Length: 111
Length: 116
Image (cartoon, rainbow over all chains, first blue to last red; front, side, top):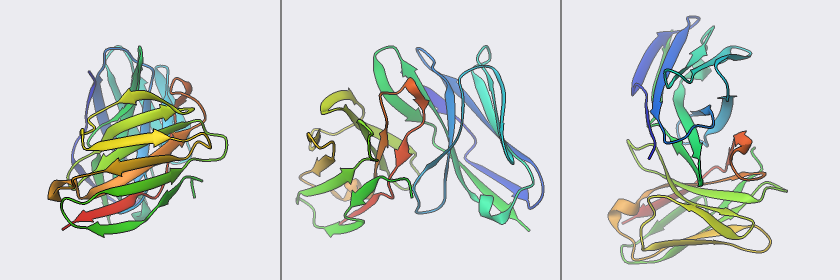
């Protein structure tokens, strides 16, 4: 089976930096993804790490450590529009084609 | 706009009834996934189809069934509905099976189902 743990809520100030952590347990591992979902909206893909290290996409970066079964999403220069839920997700492969999501972290950006 | 189309956007129905949710994947995508999202719950994987064949099954109730048609659109059938089935049901698609295309899947806007 697979399980992903992430904090349920995070609050940060506009303009600041926030890190959302994700730890996972899987029977196999094919990389860690991050998705953003605004209230009532569709989840949208943010980033994907297949290998250890940092991936940067504009204000968002994602990090993966396979040896620690750990990853994080880093959001810089926070804007009010970044208030949303953020999900980490992983696909175990090994005959399973199931993309499993964590329960999500609700980020509130305050002025 | 992800290119994934779901209908209906909103649906209200009574307990015991049956509904069908429809999904058209992005052009060229062969895989379709169905997820359920309830209040305070994450995205619960229900089922996946690839080019018409069932490939993975998650926590899908026996009252629920799905299929993918030759034109690659998919339908999720929910029967004997209960109050607890009220949720947002998402369809997602990807070009191929997971692994080959990383972990990127593209979600539709969802179908809000309210069972009263």
